[in-house]
Image 1 (cartoon, rainbow, N blue to C red):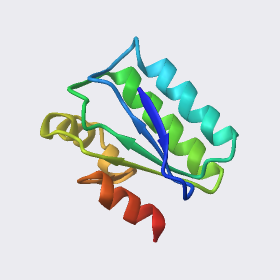
Image 2: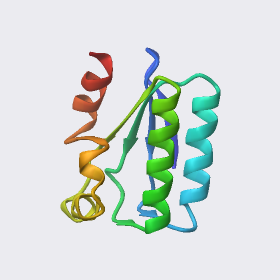
Image 3: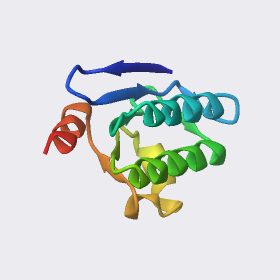
Length: 111
């Protein structure tokens, strides 16, 4: 996981190749800590992600709900066809903001 800030209030969390029961708790904790520290615009970039577990799905949903409760927004981007299919099957595409790429995510959060 890598966390970067673009300098205008948008934080990007780049998840690792495997977003699973091993990595999900650390990613969730880091994202929730950022929200606690005042971050209100966050991108979860899944460009490197090849596998996602149900625990990681729960973590993403929890972060999105926490962000919304705090008046912010989480945008996911760069989901492979396989990862997107998992989000669709879980019904997450109806409740989360998912865009094709990082520039589009930045644009969505800057609007």
